[in-house]
Amino acid sequence: MHNAAIETQCLRRTFGDKIALDSVDLRVECGEIFGYLGPNGAGKTTTIRILLGLIRPTSGQAWVLGHDVTENEPEVKAKIGVVLEDHGLYERLSAWDNLDYYSHIFHLPRAVLRGRIEALLHQVGLWDERDKKVGIFSQGMKQRLALARALLHEPELLFLDEPTAGLDPEATVMIRQLILALAHEGKRTIFLNSHNLDEVERICSRIAILHRGRIQVVDTMENLQRRFSSPILEVVVRDVAQAERAQAVLSVLPFVAGCQCEGSHVAVYLREKNVTSQILDILVKESIPVEEVRKVNRSLEDVYLSIVHEAEGNRG
Image (cartoon, rainbow, N blue to C red; front, side, top):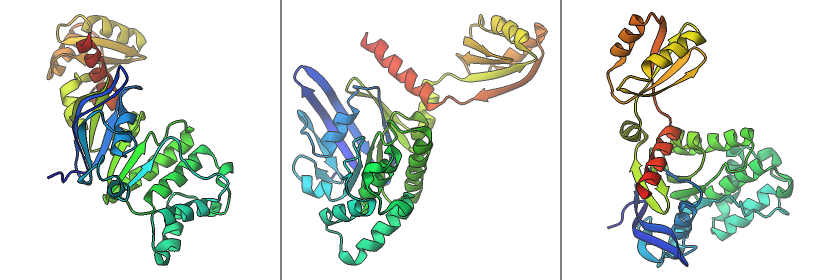
């Protein structure tokens, strides 16, 4: 019946008087790269803890790879990999010994063990550091090793909970490249909980946005951009003075939601589509020379903020 990688029905979790999750219905298909977004305190980590069997829901149900997480915890854990903010590595052991230790927990056959560890250390760029103690590793190196550990038993489903949180830009890029490589393999489902919207936008096929314990929307990026983002037209004029004139002229039009100047560029936020020719005609009549006009796609950050602000407005 439950052939999805992840499925929840009316999932609810409270901590005393605080409602962390409120009737969450979610379905993640097998092989999907799924992004799970929301502000701090939205309930993202609580969701993951329930799906991992670490805490029980107050009510509702959750299935992972067809197993009820409250009744079949060993079966679930055997098929999933997890990278949390707290890497959980043994810092007095070397990178190799960490993976060797965890391989015994996963009961990997000795015949394939050495080759598997070697391949993973190469994959995450830590082969040359394999004999060094993890305690001297940077945070980025530890996250890469934690990712290797999560992949040791070739899990069907990989949970990534804020995998780049607290990392410097260089380490963030390296972790992102590893995640992108995993996504392109297409061998497993990836459930990504991240504040890095650029990261999510690049690799996820669908996203869910959670706010105050409730899912506000689940959809593809393309559909979300169409549903929640007004069109943007970028108008390039000769200089700053002309840009300010253009802003004054365009901002009062009924089909313009607002304008923003940056140098000689004017971002025009539209209430309607297909009004580019009208805008050009108006600027020509006002003797404002236009050098370039182009449509701009809204980013995931724009969409995310629109949905969160709308949710706050509805709550009020």
